[in-house]
Length: 438
Figure 1 (cartoon, rainbow, N blue to C red):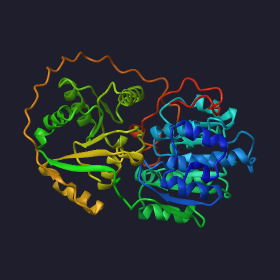
Figure 2: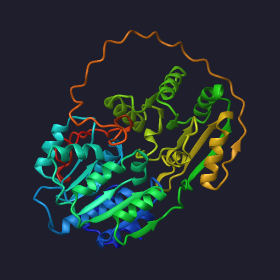
Figure 3: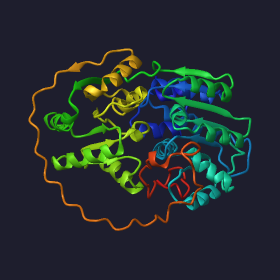
Figure 4: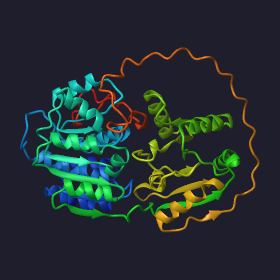
């Protein structure tokens, strides 16, 4: 069915059409009408199925039609909690896109950047606030955000937030919200912890599940090559060059391994960059932007990028090393084959990773075909450039404005990636308050 049959306003339909979307995805078709009815929702869908629009569209519709029901003027009416800065920025960008013809404000707050511009933005007023848990609690502690007017709460990628240890921060946030509100919980997987959270948070929710639990996208062609650990680099180079791959996301287990592999690919004449938690904010933003526009051919990442990265039509994902947690495999390969597009996921499996592969197969409840390794000639790498001694690192004046947080009680800054900064917007776009820090 077309989007018009979901009961959306003409302004939203115009914005959707401008993005080239003709029909809603299954999660959108099921969730939008239910959210518009004011019901709580427990929604499970594979990553890449359009779940952001599934809550963004009805929230924009509801707020454009009905007046504020509680709280002070200018206080946020909807709160979207996300696990990472990168995902928060992407959700904010989606709300901007869909609300381009509506007079609604949206802003994003997350850690790792100066808190003062965010305070200014909140003081100017906001309708929809997208936040990571730790920075939101920073604002609450400094009384720069008023959550008394929240009418709709969204927990996006709730399973990821629980995996990252945010349950205590989530409970602190819930204690600051009014009891009367609509709650929407979106999760890629249904675990016992998610069910437990849903039981305490949701009131007679509509259960929406458009994918098998912990399922990998059916549009992703998966395969395994059994490759010795010391031959993986050369075989990866062969795959990229022989297959003429122009855009591939490669996953490693460690930050050091990501750096080393990216450097080796560059020495082989393949444009590559690494993205992980130890990279500076500007370096991570630049690497992701270069990858999206094609000036970087290979992006080497740790599991920081397994959730939340939205890369249109990404054709290839390579598991250079299998993840220790089998569910992370599903999230990794979910970066390709998004929204029905075809994609391929290749895993290079060493002898020491046999148990990890079996765990993944058990989770998927299906076998992954093992392909024969073709003969290839290792490529001679260019000489490693001599490194110059680094000057002592100076403290970043934009950091440290929030409260210090431990890994167990706050958002792990080393595992967050901000989105690109926007410097302008069309005249009719919804007003984005300053200090969004993208």
